[in-house]
Image (cartoon, rainbow, N blue to C red; front, side, top):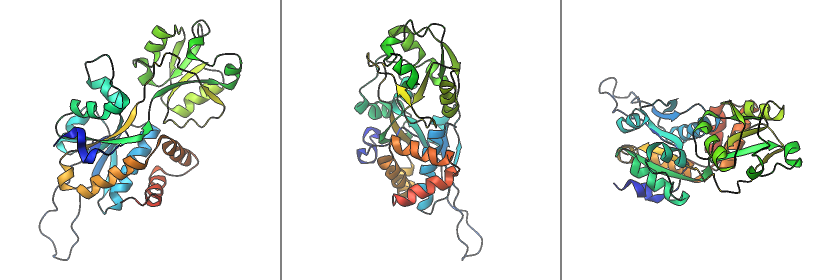
Length: 296
């Protein structure tokens, strides 16, 4: 199978995961319903990917196949290839940077195919073209009104100040290294994994600038995105990684996950996270969305 054209070339958010579904064991009453082992969709613990993973779980469940989420560990490619994971949400640019030896990333439209070529043969890619997990840098409205509206203005301004960042921003080209090299940033960093807490640190003055994925729900308003005049950041498209064998053994479930990938957008992920923050459970919010979209 040509994984670059996997599943008729449909687009999907950067995500991945897959689980082997063993055949039902023989025996028992002839009238007994066979018990299906649940498919496992990986999630990395961030709020956006937790919601995305649960959307995939809900879509699979809508076909009559049990599914659950599970943690992602270092051996995720092997887990996908072996079928221990059925699918895993991810971001194309981030994944490419971790797998490729090249310095210059491909164009956003070419990323899914390039990523597919870097993965093990037993792992395939669905594109989620409506999702963009690119890194953006925000300041408060007050800071923007004081004249800091562009990354090109942060050089001397950032000296002695603190940037609140997700851990991934410590090594990305559009993260701290890039801002220091390209824009002369001089801030020190405060690592804050939770985007809502990160936004709170920015709002209360603990940090002067903060980095977020576009898919992050921050719970904040009035934040201003700094203009990236040097085009340091690039689109980080969503993907869904799936166990290739499932296209033959569980085509209905793969098609259901692909439906999610085709429909979901960055704004939808943020809205669903907001619903969870307002008191909904991830499972209920995801199931309702999948039902409303007619998926499964």
